[in-house]
Every structure is written in C-alpha cells, then in structure tokens.
Length: 189
Image (cartoon, rainbow, N blue to C red; front, side, top):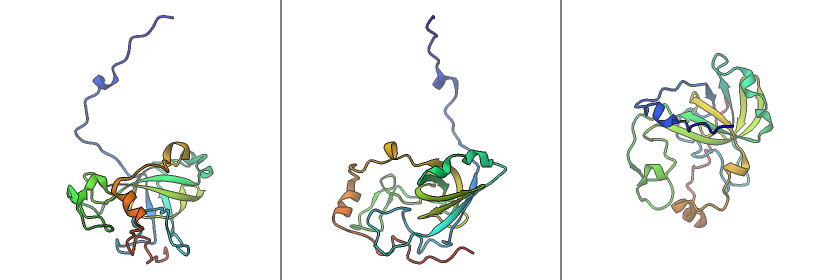
C-alpha cells in the first residue's frame, strides 16, 4: 500500500482569537457565598471528623442527553470543569491564603481569579441519576456553570510522588489555613 502524504492539520485552521463555550449544566451546592466554601475539593490531610459536603450537578438535557453519561457511574471520581462566573478581574500575582505572606504568580496557584476563570475539581461521584450527578467534596458555589465532566483515571491522573513547589514545602511544614475545609456547610434547599 502506498504511503499517504502527511496531513497539515495545524496549517488548515487559523489560531482562534476568541473561544466561545456554553454551559452543559450547573452545580446545586450548599455553598452560596465564598466564605466557608472549601478551597479544594479533596484534601489529603483533612481532619478525621471532616465530612465533605454533598451536592448535585444538573446537566442540561437539551445539551447533554442522558446516554452521554453511560458508564460514568463506574468511576469513583470525576473531573469537573467549571466557569467561575463571579470572578470578573484578575491580577498576575496573588497572596495564597496559607504559608508565608508572599505574592505568587497567579498561574502557580489555584486562585479562582484567573485570565480565564476556569475551575478544575476532582470530585467523588456518588451516583448518576438520569442527568443528575450526585457528588461529594464540592468546592463550587451554587449555580456555578459547568463546562465539562471527565472521568478521573488514576493511572494517568495521579502523580503521588510529584514535587509541587512551594505547596510541597507548606505540606511538609503542616502549614494549613483555618477555613480550608469549609466548616460552614448549609443544607441544599
């Protein structure tokens, strides 16, 4: 069989100057204000008595048919990609809420105020019910728009021995902020 010429995909389409997305769903979370909302969805060193909040992610049936969720229930965790719609501005440096009061480059932090306010959370999946995902360990406010859901796959998503810069140093020093766990957890109504 003759060898086909190489395709030049990257030359075929111009680099986009703008990207448009639409939400595929929204969060139904007990958190309605930033204060008291956990800063991360999962933590390795949570207190023994810590009980992560439960929530639901409602996917819009006219955008995501239920068949798109087929086989998702077999996963313990999912990646949730969200649009942090309340964050309108950002700065190139921020002071993280724990550790030394040092300004860090925004892209070296998990600050929600970013050039594009995209959030990424690894959340425990409890149950899939039609177009509703029941989850635990939410770190998103109620009504947060969801852009995508992907399964968490341990063999390619986990790097337990990875060095995480200044964050590794804070973890080794057991330097934790007081409200990182979102102790104020109202019920979903």
